[in-house]
Amino acid sequence: MDSGNLAWAVTATALVLVMTPGVAFFYGGLVKAKSVISMMMMSFGAIALVAVLWILYGANMSAVENPTDFAGNPFSDFGLANASSDQLVGIAYGATFAIITVALISGAIADRAKFGSWMIFVGVWATLVYFPVAAWVWGGGWAFSLGEFFGFDTATIDYAGGTAVHINAGAAALALAIVLGKRLGFQKGIQKPHNVPLVLLGAALLWFGWFGFNAGAEGTFGLLGTEDSRVGLIVINTLGATAAAIVGWLVIEKIKVGKPTSVGAVSGAVAGLVAITPACADLAPGWALVLGLITGAVCCFAVELKWKLGYDDSLDVVGIHLVGGLIGTISIGFFGTNVGLLTGGDASQLVLQVLSSLGVLIYSFVVAFVIGLIIEKTMGFRIKNEDELAGVDTAVHGEEGYLMEERV
Image (cartoon, rainbow, N blue to C red; front, side):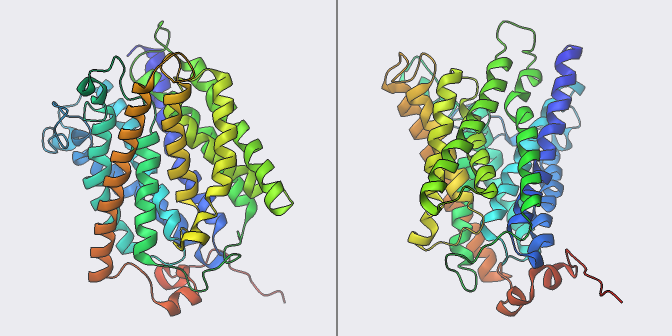
C-alpha cells in the first residue's frame, strides 16, 4: 500500500473499532437504568476476547484455499508471527468487523444474561461461526464462489457484510432470545429507554464509524486513487440510504403511533446503514435512496414481530439487523448496477444473493442455538429472577450506572 492507502486503512480501522463503543452507548441507553453497565460490558467484553482470538487464529480461519473448505487452518500462522506490516493493517481492519458482529448479538438478551456465560458464548460462536463465515463470504469460500459453481457470469455481492455481519448476528440473536426466554413481565411497553441522549450518541458514533466500515476496504486493498476505486459511490450511498431510512421509519411510526420519535429516527438510521452495507459499492445513488426508504419502513414494522411471534429480542436485533441485512443483500438482485432484475441483469444475481443469505442465516441460527442451549443447561446463561428484578448491574458487576447522592 502507498502512504495514502495505508493512512486510510489505519483510519478506517479506528473508525470501525469505535463503532462497538457506539453499540455499547446505543444499547446502554435503551435498557433499564439498572442494566446499563451490564449492557455496555457485553460490548467491551466482545472487543477484548474477539480481538485476542482473531490475532491468535481467527484471521487464519477467515480465508480458504478451496471453496469447499469449511475454514482456513487456524494454526497456519498462529499469533501472526509471520505476517508483514501491510498484512497486519488489513488483519486489524478485519478484526474490527469480527468484534462488532459479536457485540450486535448482545442486544437480544439484554437485562437477563450472565456476563461469564456471555463471554463463553462469544469465544465459541466467533470460532465456530464468524471466522468460517468470513471465509465463506470474503475469503474464497462457497458463498464467494457460488456464481462459478452455477456457471453464472456474476458472483455473490456482499461488499461490507450484509451476510457475514448483519444476517449472521441477527440469526444468532434470534437463537439466543429463544434459548434465554422472555424477560419478567414481557409485554408491550416493558422496554422504555432510560437515557435517550445516550441512544442518540451511540447512533451518531455508529453512523460516523460506518464510513470506515463501508469504505475502509478501498484503502486496505490499495484501491484509492485507481480507476477501480468506488469510494465516492460508497460514501454517498452510506449517507443517502441512511437518511432515506430515517424518513421511511418516521413516516410509518407517525402512522402507527401518531408521533415521530428520536429513538425511531436513530433506529431507522441503523436499519439504513445495515441495508446499504452489502450494496454500498453496487447501487446507483438513486437506488440507494429507494433501498433506504424501503428498509426504514419495513424494519419499523418488523420490530413488532416479537410481540406477535413471542420471542423476546430485547433491543430489536432481529427486526433491524436480520431483516435489514436480508433486504440489503437481496436488493442487489433487483437494483444492483448492471446485474439486478430492474437494472439490466437477469435472475442469476438474485439467486446468488438469496442462497448466500439463507445459508449464513440457517448455519448461524442453528449453531448459536446449540451453543446457547449447552451453556444454559450446564453453567446457566440466564440470571436468577430475583437478580433480574434487583438489577443486572449490581448482581453481576457489583456496580451502579448512576449513583444519586442524597442532598443535605
